[in-house]
Length: 148
Ligand code: HEC
Image 1 (cartoon, rainbow, N blue to C red):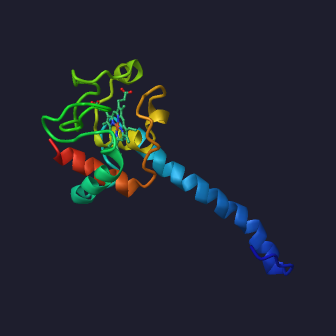
Image 2 (image 1 turned 90 degrees about the vertical axis):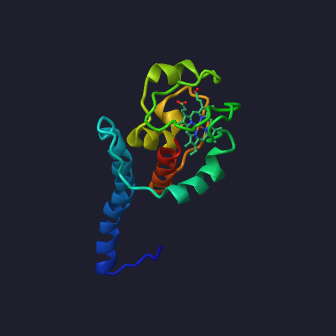
């Protein structure tokens, strides 16, 4: 950052904190949007299922299968998970915390979950750091939606 002593420099210096504040507030405003649309299950973005499949295999497949008939080993098989209530597979021992949440995997709920599962349901064993990019999340959700 360049320090200037001119009058315009001083104006820039006073304007800067406001811009910094916006840079912090805007992402949170977007992050908060899915929570408020949770009931309707509306998605903030329309995803691309083909791109989402790639992201799924990059990030989620380390723990999850997503093909019909595959077992739930380290994590529940995600084939058909879209639109389902949490914790329905009999071959996986879900945590109490996740079962008690009773969530239904709509677009908006998945969006929050994939962004930060531990923040959404503290105590979950899905210790995944989360996908910070909303477009990537939308793509994965589009893939899961198609994959049933
Ligand atoms: C480190 C391993 C790991 C990674 C990576 C991971 N998950 Fe999970 N996931 C889990 C575990 C374990 C559970 C069960 C959580 C519990 O019972 O608390 C779970 C649960 C879920 C559920 C609920 C399933 C159900 O039957 O209700 C969804 C949906 C889900 N994960 C989606 C994803 C997606 C999408 C990704 C990638 C963006 C992902 N997970 C990445 C381990 C992981």
